Amino acid sequence: MKADIHPNYVECNVSCACGNKFVTRASQDIIKIEICNVCHPFFTGKQKIIDTAGRVERFKRKYEVQS
Image (cartoon, rainbow, N blue to C red; front, side, top):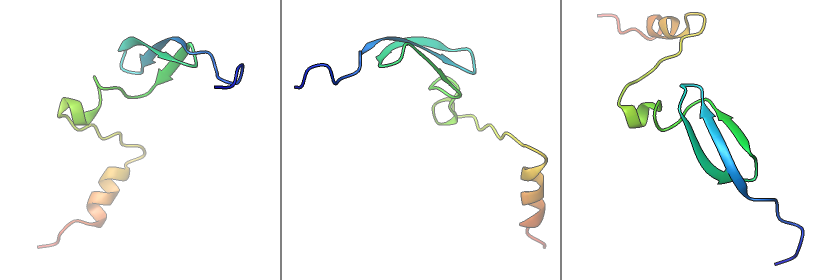
């Protein structure tokens, strides 16, 4: 391998928006993420819908099945 072309691989503190924190290794020393394995719907089994300006309700009304 060539010398002096690779980034430093250091211990990294990762913090999620849900409050979960863990330590890993990366080329940065601090990483902030929005979703992790603790709050991700795939791992928790819970579905979170973040509704901004009523978009979910508008979608449901638009594609509602009329019977």
